[in-house]
Image (cartoon, rainbow, N blue to C red):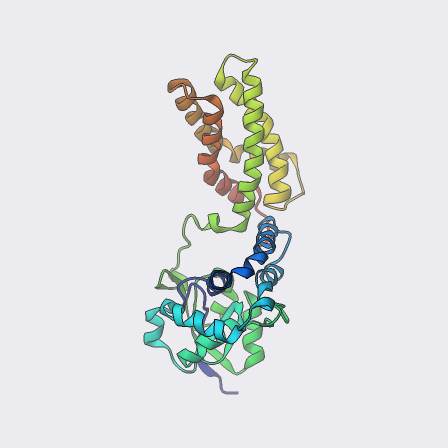
Length: 326
Protein backbone atom coordinates (compact mmCIF):
# COMPACT_ATOMS: atom_id res chain seq x y z
CA UNK A 1 0.00 0.00 0.00
CA UNK A 2 1.36 3.40 -1.03
CA UNK A 3 1.82 5.81 1.87
CA UNK A 4 0.74 9.44 1.49
CA UNK A 5 3.30 11.91 2.81
CA UNK A 6 1.77 14.75 4.86
CA UNK A 7 2.95 17.33 7.34
CA UNK A 8 1.24 17.28 10.73
CA UNK A 9 0.92 20.22 13.11
CA UNK A 10 -0.19 20.71 16.67
CA UNK A 11 -2.16 23.94 17.03
CA UNK A 12 -1.82 25.66 20.42
CA UNK A 13 1.59 27.20 21.07
CA UNK A 14 2.73 25.72 17.76
CA UNK A 15 1.13 27.31 14.73
CA UNK A 16 -1.05 29.45 17.02
CA UNK A 17 0.79 31.77 19.39
CA UNK A 18 -1.10 31.00 22.56
CA UNK A 19 -3.84 28.65 23.69
CA UNK A 20 -6.92 28.99 21.49
CA UNK A 21 -9.25 27.45 24.08
CA UNK A 22 -8.15 29.88 26.78
CA UNK A 23 -8.38 32.84 24.40
CA UNK A 24 -11.85 31.81 23.26
CA UNK A 25 -13.14 31.42 26.81
CA UNK A 26 -11.82 34.85 27.79
CA UNK A 27 -13.25 36.36 24.57
CA UNK A 28 -16.71 34.95 25.31
CA UNK A 29 -16.73 36.04 28.94
CA UNK A 30 -15.68 39.57 27.97
CA UNK A 31 -18.28 39.93 25.20
CA UNK A 32 -21.09 38.19 27.05
CA UNK A 33 -20.86 39.24 30.73
CA UNK A 34 -23.83 37.08 31.69
CA UNK A 35 -21.57 34.06 31.12
CA UNK A 36 -19.52 35.10 34.13
CA UNK A 37 -21.96 33.06 36.18
CA UNK A 38 -19.90 30.07 35.00
CA UNK A 39 -16.68 31.49 36.48
CA UNK A 40 -17.06 29.72 39.86
CA UNK A 41 -17.67 26.44 38.06
CA UNK A 42 -14.60 26.99 35.91
CA UNK A 43 -12.48 27.93 38.92
CA UNK A 44 -13.60 24.78 40.73
CA UNK A 45 -12.64 22.65 37.71
CA UNK A 46 -9.17 24.18 37.57
CA UNK A 47 -8.75 23.68 41.31
CA UNK A 48 -9.65 20.00 41.06
CA UNK A 49 -7.33 19.61 38.08
CA UNK A 50 -4.41 21.09 40.00
CA UNK A 51 -5.14 18.69 42.85
CA UNK A 52 -5.16 15.84 40.34
CA UNK A 53 -8.75 14.88 41.20
CA UNK A 54 -10.20 15.53 37.72
CA UNK A 55 -8.74 14.58 34.35
CA UNK A 56 -8.16 17.04 31.53
CA UNK A 57 -11.22 15.92 29.58
CA UNK A 58 -13.58 16.43 32.49
CA UNK A 59 -12.04 19.81 33.25
CA UNK A 60 -12.34 20.87 29.62
CA UNK A 61 -16.06 20.07 29.64
CA UNK A 62 -16.52 22.20 32.74
CA UNK A 63 -14.59 25.10 31.22
CA UNK A 64 -16.73 25.01 28.07
CA UNK A 65 -20.07 24.44 29.80
CA UNK A 66 -20.91 28.11 29.14
CA UNK A 67 -21.49 27.40 25.42
CA UNK A 68 -24.99 26.20 26.22
CA UNK A 69 -25.87 29.84 27.01
CA UNK A 70 -23.91 31.40 24.16
CA UNK A 71 -26.51 33.16 21.99
CA UNK A 72 -24.81 32.94 18.58
CA UNK A 73 -22.02 30.39 18.26
CA UNK A 74 -21.35 30.89 14.50
CA UNK A 75 -21.22 34.66 14.92
CA UNK A 76 -19.04 34.39 18.02
CA UNK A 77 -16.58 32.09 16.25
CA UNK A 78 -16.39 34.46 13.28
CA UNK A 79 -15.76 37.46 15.56
CA UNK A 80 -13.20 35.54 17.60
CA UNK A 81 -11.10 34.51 14.62
CA UNK A 82 -11.39 37.93 13.00
CA UNK A 83 -9.58 39.34 16.03
CA UNK A 84 -7.24 36.38 16.67
CA UNK A 85 -6.16 35.30 13.21
CA UNK A 86 -3.11 37.53 13.70
CA UNK A 87 -1.82 34.97 16.21
CA UNK A 88 -1.25 32.37 13.52
CA UNK A 89 2.55 32.07 13.24
CA UNK A 90 4.02 33.66 10.14
CA UNK A 91 6.45 30.77 9.67
CA UNK A 92 3.48 28.46 9.26
CA UNK A 93 1.73 30.79 6.81
CA UNK A 94 4.88 30.72 4.69
CA UNK A 95 5.13 26.94 4.49
CA UNK A 96 1.56 25.64 4.81
CA UNK A 97 0.19 23.20 2.28
CA UNK A 98 -3.39 22.18 1.55
CA UNK A 99 -2.49 18.60 2.50
CA UNK A 100 -1.45 19.60 6.04
CA UNK A 101 -3.23 17.92 8.94
CA UNK A 102 -3.83 19.80 12.18
CA UNK A 103 -4.18 17.62 15.28
CA UNK A 104 -5.05 19.36 18.51
CA UNK A 105 -6.48 18.91 21.99
CA UNK A 106 -8.58 22.06 21.52
CA UNK A 107 -12.25 21.58 20.56
CA UNK A 108 -12.75 20.72 16.92
CA UNK A 109 -15.64 23.20 16.46
CA UNK A 110 -13.32 26.00 17.62
CA UNK A 111 -10.50 25.25 15.17
CA UNK A 112 -12.56 24.38 12.09
CA UNK A 113 -13.29 28.00 11.01
CA UNK A 114 -9.61 28.96 11.23
CA UNK A 115 -8.52 25.85 9.36
CA UNK A 116 -11.02 26.71 6.63
CA UNK A 117 -9.53 30.21 6.36
CA UNK A 118 -6.06 28.71 6.08
CA UNK A 119 -7.20 26.30 3.40
CA UNK A 120 -6.17 23.31 5.52
CA UNK A 121 -8.31 20.25 6.04
CA UNK A 122 -8.88 18.15 8.00
CA UNK A 123 -8.72 19.19 11.63
CA UNK A 124 -8.48 16.27 14.02
CA UNK A 125 -9.21 17.66 17.47
CA UNK A 126 -11.23 17.00 20.59
CA UNK A 127 -14.77 16.30 19.48
CA UNK A 128 -16.99 18.52 21.58
CA UNK A 129 -20.66 19.37 21.18
CA UNK A 130 -20.70 23.12 20.46
CA UNK A 131 -24.14 23.39 22.06
CA UNK A 132 -23.40 21.67 25.38
CA UNK A 133 -19.61 21.53 25.82
CA UNK A 134 -19.78 17.75 26.23
CA UNK A 135 -16.89 15.72 24.78
CA UNK A 136 -17.59 12.78 22.51
CA UNK A 137 -14.91 10.13 22.79
CA UNK A 138 -11.51 10.98 24.28
CA UNK A 139 -9.56 14.17 24.77
CA UNK A 140 -7.36 14.43 21.67
CA UNK A 141 -3.87 14.52 23.20
CA UNK A 142 -0.76 12.35 23.51
CA UNK A 143 -1.30 8.84 22.10
CA UNK A 144 -4.93 9.65 21.23
CA UNK A 145 -3.63 11.91 18.43
CA UNK A 146 -1.97 8.92 16.77
CA UNK A 147 -5.16 6.88 17.08
CA UNK A 148 -7.21 9.69 15.55
CA UNK A 149 -4.75 10.07 12.67
CA UNK A 150 -4.81 6.36 11.86
CA UNK A 151 -8.60 6.27 12.16
CA UNK A 152 -8.82 9.14 9.69
CA UNK A 153 -6.42 7.61 7.15
CA UNK A 154 -4.20 4.60 7.81
CA UNK A 155 -2.29 5.20 4.56
CA UNK A 156 -0.76 8.44 5.89
CA UNK A 157 2.98 8.73 6.49
CA UNK A 158 4.05 11.79 8.51
CA UNK A 159 6.85 13.66 6.79
CA UNK A 160 7.29 16.70 9.07
CA UNK A 161 5.61 16.98 12.46
CA UNK A 162 5.56 20.06 14.69
CA UNK A 163 4.51 20.37 18.33
CA UNK A 164 5.41 22.45 21.36
CA UNK A 165 4.68 19.68 23.85
CA UNK A 166 6.61 16.48 24.50
CA UNK A 167 3.35 14.79 25.45
CA UNK A 168 3.06 14.51 21.66
CA UNK A 169 6.09 12.20 21.46
CA UNK A 170 3.95 9.28 20.18
CA UNK A 171 3.08 11.42 17.15
CA UNK A 172 6.49 13.08 16.79
CA UNK A 173 8.25 9.71 16.71
CA UNK A 174 6.20 8.64 13.69
CA UNK A 175 7.54 11.54 11.63
CA UNK A 176 10.54 11.46 9.34
CA UNK A 177 11.39 14.95 10.54
CA UNK A 178 9.97 15.81 13.99
CA UNK A 179 10.31 19.35 15.33
CA UNK A 180 9.72 20.92 18.74
CA UNK A 181 8.37 24.48 18.54
CA UNK A 182 9.16 26.97 21.29
CA UNK A 183 8.43 30.67 20.81
CA UNK A 184 8.33 30.22 17.02
CA UNK A 185 11.74 28.54 17.03
CA UNK A 186 11.65 25.11 15.39
CA UNK A 187 14.22 22.63 16.68
CA UNK A 188 14.69 19.05 15.45
CA UNK A 189 13.53 16.66 18.16
CA UNK A 190 16.94 15.02 18.56
CA UNK A 191 18.50 18.45 19.17
CA UNK A 192 15.86 19.69 21.60
CA UNK A 193 16.88 20.35 25.20
CA UNK A 194 13.97 20.82 27.62
CA UNK A 195 14.12 24.12 29.54
CA UNK A 196 15.69 23.69 32.97
CA UNK A 197 12.63 25.16 34.66
CA UNK A 198 10.09 23.24 32.60
CA UNK A 199 9.16 21.19 35.67
CA UNK A 200 7.74 24.35 37.23
CA UNK A 201 4.91 24.31 34.66
CA UNK A 202 3.92 20.82 35.86
CA UNK A 203 0.52 20.77 37.65
CA UNK A 204 2.34 18.99 40.46
CA UNK A 205 4.25 22.21 41.12
CA UNK A 206 0.98 24.05 41.71
CA UNK A 207 -0.04 21.27 44.12
CA UNK A 208 3.36 21.61 45.74
CA UNK A 209 2.77 25.33 46.24
CA UNK A 210 -0.61 24.62 47.80
CA UNK A 211 0.90 22.02 50.11
CA UNK A 212 3.79 24.39 50.66
CA UNK A 213 1.37 26.97 51.98
CA UNK A 214 0.23 24.48 54.61
CA UNK A 215 3.82 23.45 55.38
CA UNK A 216 4.99 27.06 55.59
CA UNK A 217 2.13 27.88 57.93
CA UNK A 218 3.05 24.93 60.12
CA UNK A 219 6.72 25.91 60.09
CA UNK A 220 5.97 29.54 60.85
CA UNK A 221 3.55 28.68 63.67
CA UNK A 222 5.83 26.01 65.15
CA UNK A 223 8.87 28.27 64.95
CA UNK A 224 7.07 31.28 66.34
CA UNK A 225 5.56 29.39 69.29
CA UNK A 226 8.90 27.80 70.10
CA UNK A 227 10.60 31.22 69.86
CA UNK A 228 8.44 32.35 72.77
CA UNK A 229 10.27 29.83 74.96
CA UNK A 230 13.66 29.60 73.23
CA UNK A 231 15.93 32.63 73.20
CA UNK A 232 17.69 31.84 69.92
CA UNK A 233 15.64 32.70 66.84
CA UNK A 234 17.66 30.24 64.76
CA UNK A 235 17.16 27.52 67.34
CA UNK A 236 13.42 28.11 67.32
CA UNK A 237 13.43 28.02 63.54
CA UNK A 238 15.39 24.73 63.44
CA UNK A 239 12.98 22.99 65.84
CA UNK A 240 9.91 24.34 64.04
CA UNK A 241 11.39 23.37 60.70
CA UNK A 242 12.01 19.80 61.86
CA UNK A 243 8.40 19.39 62.98
CA UNK A 244 6.99 20.86 59.77
CA UNK A 245 9.26 18.55 57.75
CA UNK A 246 7.37 15.51 59.00
CA UNK A 247 4.05 17.08 58.02
CA UNK A 248 5.52 18.06 54.66
CA UNK A 249 6.65 14.52 53.84
CA UNK A 250 3.19 13.00 54.18
CA UNK A 251 1.33 15.86 52.47
CA UNK A 252 3.70 15.92 49.50
CA UNK A 253 3.49 12.17 49.12
CA UNK A 254 -0.32 12.06 49.16
CA UNK A 255 -1.24 15.32 47.42
CA UNK A 256 1.68 16.59 45.36
CA UNK A 257 3.29 13.46 43.92
CA UNK A 258 0.57 10.89 44.67
CA UNK A 259 2.98 8.29 46.05
CA UNK A 260 1.53 6.73 49.19
CA UNK A 261 4.02 3.86 49.51
CA UNK A 262 5.82 5.59 52.37
CA UNK A 263 9.04 4.12 53.70
CA UNK A 264 11.86 5.09 56.02
CA UNK A 265 14.27 5.04 53.06
CA UNK A 266 12.07 7.45 51.11
CA UNK A 267 11.76 9.71 54.15
CA UNK A 268 15.56 9.88 54.36
CA UNK A 269 15.70 10.86 50.67
CA UNK A 270 13.01 13.43 51.40
CA UNK A 271 15.10 14.92 54.20
CA UNK A 272 18.18 15.00 51.95
CA UNK A 273 16.09 16.76 49.26
CA UNK A 274 15.28 19.45 51.80
CA UNK A 275 18.92 20.22 52.60
CA UNK A 276 19.12 23.00 49.95
CA UNK A 277 15.77 24.29 51.24
CA UNK A 278 17.10 24.40 54.79
CA UNK A 279 20.31 26.17 53.75
CA UNK A 280 18.41 28.80 51.75
CA UNK A 281 15.84 29.43 54.47
CA UNK A 282 18.37 29.31 57.30
CA UNK A 283 20.52 31.90 55.52
CA UNK A 284 17.62 34.23 54.78
CA UNK A 285 16.26 33.99 58.32
CA UNK A 286 19.72 34.73 59.70
CA UNK A 287 20.16 37.81 57.50
CA UNK A 288 16.64 39.21 57.97
CA UNK A 289 15.96 38.32 61.59
CA UNK A 290 19.36 38.40 63.25
CA UNK A 291 21.29 40.91 61.15
CA UNK A 292 18.57 43.34 60.02
CA UNK A 293 16.33 42.67 63.04
CA UNK A 294 13.19 42.29 60.95
CA UNK A 295 10.05 40.76 62.40
CA UNK A 296 10.60 36.99 62.82
CA UNK A 297 7.25 36.01 61.32
CA UNK A 298 8.03 37.96 58.13
CA UNK A 299 11.51 36.43 57.87
CA UNK A 300 10.21 32.85 58.19
CA UNK A 301 7.46 33.39 55.61
CA UNK A 302 9.62 35.14 52.98
CA UNK A 303 12.36 32.53 53.27
CA UNK A 304 9.90 29.68 52.68
CA UNK A 305 8.55 31.32 49.52
CA UNK A 306 11.97 31.93 48.00
CA UNK A 307 13.11 28.34 48.58
CA UNK A 308 10.03 26.69 47.01
CA UNK A 309 11.22 26.18 43.36
CA UNK A 310 14.52 24.58 44.38
CA UNK A 311 12.74 22.27 46.81
CA UNK A 312 10.21 21.10 44.21
CA UNK A 313 12.93 20.23 41.70
CA UNK A 314 14.83 18.25 44.32
CA UNK A 315 11.73 16.30 45.38
CA UNK A 316 10.64 15.50 41.82
CA UNK A 317 14.09 14.33 40.73
CA UNK A 318 15.33 12.58 43.86
CA UNK A 319 12.52 11.58 46.24
CA UNK A 320 9.19 11.01 44.48
CA UNK A 321 10.31 9.53 41.17
CA UNK A 322 7.52 7.08 40.35
CA UNK A 323 4.79 9.60 39.62
CA UNK A 324 2.84 8.90 36.45
CA UNK A 325 2.67 11.63 33.81
CA UNK A 326 -0.20 14.08 34.20
